Length: 231
Image (tube, rainbow, N blue to C red; front, side):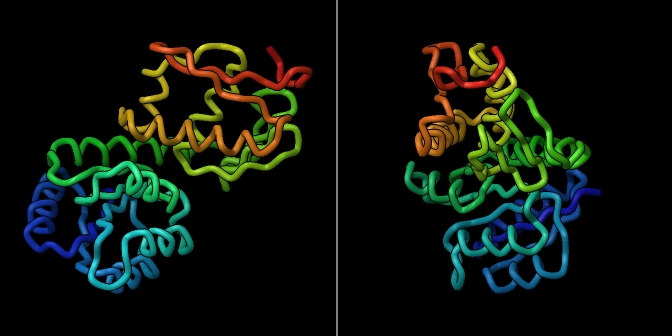
């Protein structure tokens, strides 16, 4: 049975989410504040964390950092917040979140996203955590989500890692928007934010290549001129 941790200071939201997710077969723990959440995260492992941003003590970003530093490097974290602006979404993803939903929300959608992230996490964790090479001069370390292109190491969030490695596996070839959306629970804003952040990381070194948008269709990774990534 998959274990879920719900972190929110709104008792009504907690009760509704707890009842619904329990009915879907999840084992659910709840925390009404950051301190309680941190205590749980230090003693238990979860298959998914649903996390509010505005908590009475620690904010959700700080709790997310604790989760990542106490054995939850690969645990899917979904922010669920009334803060719906782009800056808040970006901050949540930068803090280590895998997804970001805004209130009000659909219980069915929340459950669907949890299911998608947990399933993807199980597949991810079952793969070899060693170093893979999708193309010459590219090395991928799954365990720590590190992508090295020509010796330059880039540390990725889970979503960034999956998007970039999919593009690197198909250099100079179109990867459809639909295929990439499947990596981020079909959330367009998450895809766009991740692609933008990957581009910023690639831009730190001219030897890393670029991601080009094929408008209306998807994206493709273009190695630098003279680069050693195979066509």
